[in-house]
Length: 323
Image (cartoon, rainbow, N blue to C red; front, side):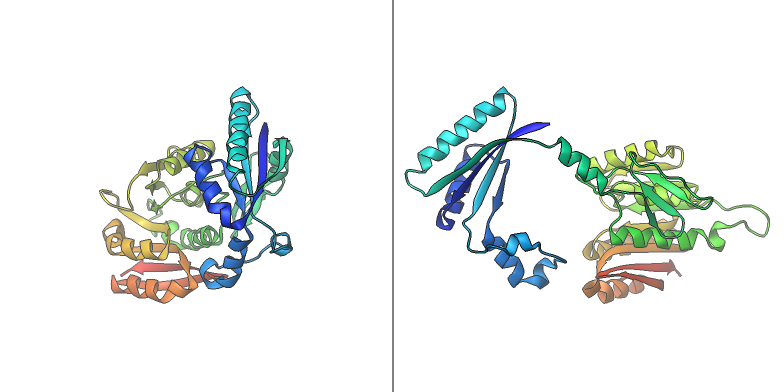
């Protein structure tokens, strides 16, 4: 798909004024390259918690800010571009604006290269996540989730998600997922709070859970989860629904998994007990290392016994059991 971009350079003192002018006239599809933003990130590593900053961004820290505006390549887009250029030339009478380029770009090659970065990925011992455009020959033990990375929800392979899948593998592979002494396999139910793409509910179902309910406060997440559930042929086992954590939910499970944030984990924990059967497991993730102790204490305060704490870089996942 082709699009048009208009790039300008402005004095730092004029940046906010020009940005406000463009927004006031409805031009919101823009990118701002301001070295001051990079300086702020470098000066506050604890706030931004970055892993890597490209040398390209720090190569010329004395450069002036640049604004790039984006327009469609159709007739309407061309009209909007012409109007924006006229608006900026009028503003140049009172501000120092340098027009750098007006170019037509084609993102089809970029889209292809973007796909090249996503390959089948093993998570834990058995789960393999693969995009639809990649071929993969599974082994006998592999359980394959086909899921395309989306702009809003990603590939589902963040460290916090991976740790949840590993915890599910350990739990669903133990005695509570095996046949009882009477030869009957008990029904295993899983509640996924903050389900996002639905990847954890899908993993649980593939690992042997009989029934899963996913809940998310974002309607788009619920829609994406439902699409992924259908795509993996698990509509009979998994349901996704809109909701705020477990408020108004009447569901008792053997496993509750919540890949959220520390503050939401703490808020959720007080309500989780009523959704777990005796001996049920509670998997929480999305916890930064600096929040590990406070989350563990909050979980223990609600009567849970900590079984395991998984660690991956700065992230933590806590596995607990209802006493």
